Length: 492
Ligand SMILES: [Zn+2]
Image 1 (spheres, rainbow, N blue to C red):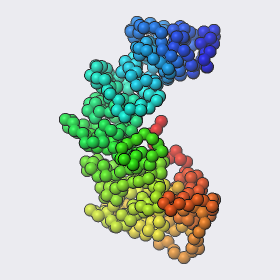
Image 2 (spheres, protein in one colour):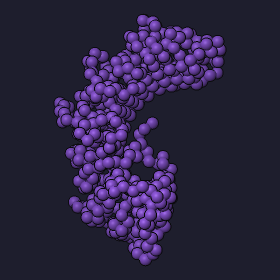
Image 3 (tube, rainbow, N blue to C red):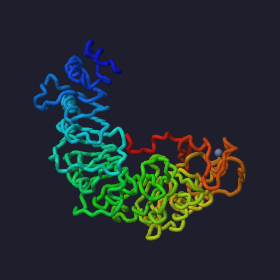
Image 4 (tube, protein in one colour):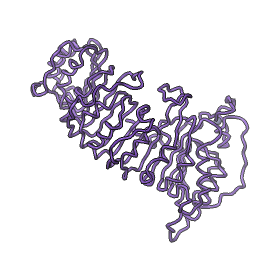
């Protein structure tokens, strides 16, 4: 409903309506409150409230009578152009205090988030908070983290804080049943507040920490001993990695590392036109028990083409349990990540021991095409013995069972790759197609380019539409495009 929504809302009675979306002026909130009583089946409400609420008194939650309290399964409230005392905007929210799934969005940095969310403390299970405009200041001054006493949110399972200072919020909440915590593009992040919060939420399984820059880029110290956690999956950037050393992560199996946008001066910036970089050296500094538990490492989050990835060769030997690896595409023609991987795996040999590189690797995703002859040699070495029937030797590396590429190579290459994956020696005799026109990716896959006049630069690898159709999944017995959703991320 548009701006005249209140006229309609006040004149109709719709007891069977379950979903309502409305934009109203804040002065109409009290009218809305009385009219909503007629929507007895309302389950899902999305409200955009424009302007400031004129009243000055917040009704205390207990004084909201059972009649006026509306039990929703989902509530989304967006405050726009709201100024003046924050407390006045909260009075409407008390109507919906028994909602399980709540999302609040506000424009202002100084919105009193702890008070707003405390209204829902008893019943809320999923809570998402978002600031509509990303603060331009790199570091928001956090008022006083102790100004709010901690309030228990006994049913809260998922907490998502997006683009606002999270420390005052984390410091106001105890969420013993929390399973998923997502902190994104945070300005006011203090490690101590984060760790104190984690301590009260021992059941967190999924942690997303992105956009943490300034606060923990320089070394920080805390008095915390490593906290026991049950965290299984983490999404973060290389800037967020150091804080993991303050957690015990015995259950961690999946780490998704996002590239970050970095200006030439080395300072973190929000401008998304800047080149993106991924540094893997912070991985090497993690506790070895974290690295040894890791089975999945995903460096492709967001499907970025990265300007620079540093430290892959150094990180690989530490990942002795890794079964799944996803490598992003890099911009330059040199140091292609999948080629670095293949070279290192071949150097490590096929015997699982100190030297083997990724001895448990079964599934490889790469956004670049590998150099085929090296890959075929690797597969010949790794997969040949593994496919021999009979007694398995425990000290051998496992075969690479799945290869996921940005597109299909020509059929001769594909056939050789599949033969090698099946543990057979692929023939070298066949049509040696070399393509001289078209994009770099078509040359690499020996394909006929859809864009033969593609503009070529010395540095960057060119690509045509053929290589963006999806992901090609190759095993010894099958090949073909898979749906993109198979590459899961934590984004909702
Ligand atoms: Zn092409």
